[in-house]
Length: 171
Image 1 (cartoon, helix red, strand yellow):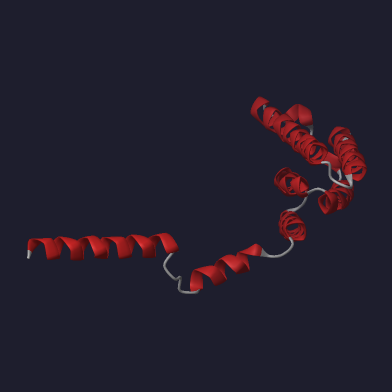
Image 2 (cartoon, rainbow, N blue to C red):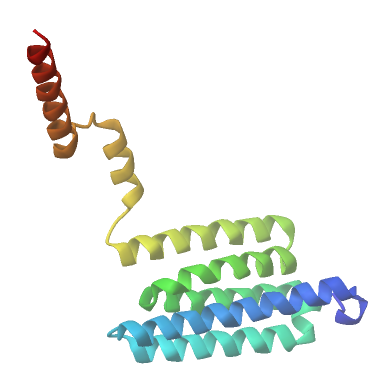
């Protein structure tokens, strides 16, 4: 798509997409610095590489005109993003702007397939950093009958004592 044919709204949305990706890359780096992660250098290098690859592809007119070039660029962005996801849990949020790029530049079938793979990769990255798939634990906890909490039991005993004391004082 020729950028000169875009309406002002579409140009603004496209610019916002690039700003969002830049902001999320910055978030990944800032959080890694704040938490002093062991792979800090890798996070910074991969974030810079991903930003550079994205910027080059966004500025390269052939990416917008050629489906094969767009697919190659999105594949390269996806590979760098996956590497960043391995060392930074915040890189998971980058899946959102990647969805828009994939759906905009690829044919519908390939775009949807890329979105599914990006989603699965983001989920895998989330599980990798959390140490497992937590949704299963949530379902298991919901299906097991819960015993009353200690506070509930103490309140129930206290109320029963108060009621029995009130009955005995009336007699």
